[in-house]
Length: 161
Image (tube, rainbow, N blue to C red):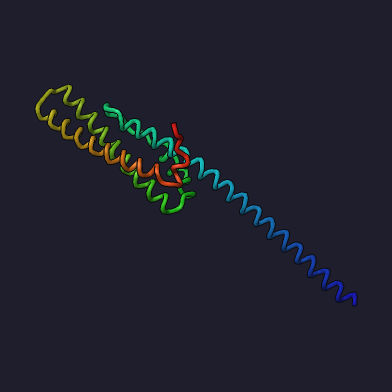
């Protein structure tokens, strides 16, 4: 009889140990999930603010560089991995266009400086052509940002003014 009691006791001890280890693993996963959700929320909030700031820069008549440090930092730190693939694709596509438009802004600025120095008709044409392309890109990027900011997973982080 004592042998049966020892077997039951051993089985209970193993069950309690297994339950404790399982609970510890589950709590660890819950803590990781909670931390990841906080990181994701902060990332999306910061990106929403950055996209609004880029929209404001695009609205300006003056040619401005389009600052996208939040996105660049998220790429460098690997924080974009916290986003689902669909969201990641949409954000990456918009930021690729922002980066391209930023490069165009640099080209326009350089062409403007060349025109100011030489005052030649060739530099005027090049500046005018680059400025037209830049303005078209500004409109395209502005539309893409508007579409992205209306996505349900990002729109909750856009502050209403």
